Each structure stands twice: as C-alpha cells, then as structure tokens.
Length: 435
Image (tube, rainbow, N blue to C red; front, side):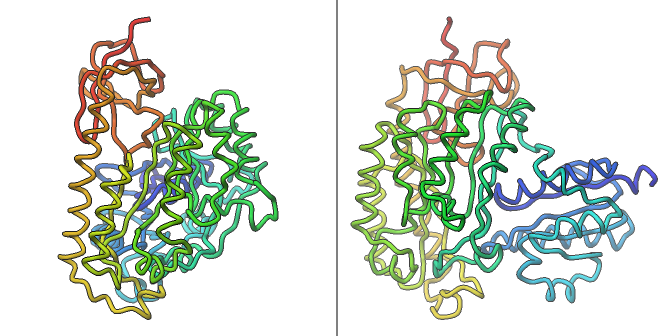
C-alpha cells in the first residue's frame, strides 16, 4: 500500500461507548499496518471511517452532516474510501445507502470485522481486549455490558444495541490489567444499564463482585460508575463505595423525571416515592457522595404542572451534577409509535433551560462552600501556564474541572493535593498544597 492508501482517519461521534468501539477498531487497524489518526482537525487523503450516533435528533443530524461532508470529499477524489459505521446505519442503513451513494459501505454496531476487512486489513480476534486509547493516557472508559433489556418509552437503545449482554468478569479484569499496564490510573465503568450487570449470567451481586476484584488491580486509583438504572439498583455496591477509597464517591444515575404520571408514560418502573427514597439512601449510606442525574423535559404527557414539580424537585434535592435534555420523538420507540409529540420544540428547550438555570445557582452555591478546603485531584492536561484537573467527584468532559496555578513541575496523570481558592458555577480554582 502507498502511504495515502495506508492511512485511515477515524471520526467518532456520540457517547463514550462509541469511543470504546473506536479504540478497539484503531487497535485492529494498527495491527494490519495502517497509519491511523482519530478525530483529526483536517483529513488529508487516505480512507475515512465515521463511527456515528443515532440516539436522538441532534445526534442524528450531526452524524448526517458529517457523512455529507466526507461524502463530498469522496466524490471529489480527496479521500480514497469512505466507510460509515455505528448506531445510525444500524437503524437506517437502507435509507442511507439510497440517499448517500458516495459512501462505500455502511455497517452497524457489531460489524467490526467487516469494517477491517473492507479496508483490506486482517481481523485479529486475539486483540479484542487491546485498544488504542484516544483519551489522555491516565484514564479510560471500560464497557462492562452491551445492550439493554428495559422498555423505556422514549429510548431507542434496545432497538440499536439489542438485548443486555454482560461481559464476563474475567474478560473485564484482563482488559483493566492491560490498561493499568499502560499507565491508566482511572477507569470509568460504562453500560447502557450498569444496574443489570450479571443478571443474564445468573450471577448474584455481580457488580459488587466485579468491583471487589477491580480494586485489587495495581495502578488503578479511581473507579467511577456511570449509567446505573434506578430500578433493581444493586444496593450491595454502596458499602464498597463507602469503605474503599479507590471507588469514587460518585454515581451517575438518570432519574429522568419525578412526576408519577410522566414516569408511568416513560415506563421507568418506579415512582416519585421511590426516587426520593433512592436519593436519601444514597446519601445516608455514602456520606459525601456526589450524584449525577439526567432529566428529560417535554416528554409526551408532561403538563406545565408536571414540569413545575420537576423544577421543585431539582431545587429541593440539590443534585451536585445534572444533565438536561429536551425530549426527542424517535421512530421505533413506544413513545414514537403510540404517543403524540404535542409539546413544541421551543417549549421543550425552554423547560430544559429553566432547569439548567436553577441548577447553575445550586452548583455555584455548592462550589463556594469548597473554598478553603483541600481536595485530591487528578491532572488531565496543561493549558498555557495552568493545569486542568478533576476531583473524584467529576467525570471527564461532562463535569466540572479544577484550574491549578502555581506549580510548573506537575504534569498530566499526576495526583496532587490542592487548596481551593475560588469557585464558579462549573469550575474551581486551586493552588497546590506544599508538602
């Protein structure tokens, strides 16, 4: 192969689960001798792979726009081959093939081997535990299961990713040991439904058992939990979180709403009383825990009264971290087929913005209380004369950061004790504590 023919640019859109898939693919391509680059600022020749997201309208639009951009480059002869993979073609392959013929091949979420072989590479099943990290070398996402068995009315993930399949614990342990050997110090466990891990394997307390093994791996300092479903939550993990400093006192658990009528239409499997009990129990069993939740505005059936109740819930509960999304009417979902999307987009977004405004004030107040305290942080990167870090209570990209000034000897991947000197709604400033 010529240098250009040997070059592959991989563009990843969407969530961290997609990023893990891309990292596995990059390792496969490198094993076949390809020169690879991930999310380059500019593509110059070679082949392009786009790993798409197809979860909500905004993500689909971004994916389509990206495909069209590179389809034009393919048509103009600026790139040799264009392959599109992931969630979007998993749902709309026939339509995409008809509408964008400039794309050489479309593949779904489980077609890794076909993608590699389309580029004339060799698929190496023995390398599936290995990845080319696209994150900074000190942290990595680790997928512990795939798919989802829930039937939430608004969600298309089961249609895209299929039924829940847990990865064997031995496989996960092997992967994390490989990551630790590369210098990874923090892992974020991710799944469509972390709470359901191990149920399909008929293993009781599977997530707790996995965590007990993960904390024994040398080099791993922080273990973070993302996307735990509230119903059937594995309560046995809370004592582990409280007792073991390697498990971050951080839980990402999307409640979506508080109104019983909306939760029923969403088919979430719990009600307002359950949610309030959950929050109380989390905070009682793990003092100091930081809760990140996700909320959805404008779901079919959400009245103004329902929304005001949600807004009051945010004010009263004072979550440390909140993500808010306007409802997206998706074909192939129960809501998309059976409910009328009666709330205007402008109103959905307005409701989301009102929650964001309330949460901004809460976050600012909580952050101001940290001024004068000391925290252990992990440095992610350097920006000019400053260092950007995170506490154990913050996940990369979605949560707040700590701006450190005053010590040029520190570097990304270092843990350091800092004193908080200032606060904003979404960030802190700090100086290193002299040892």
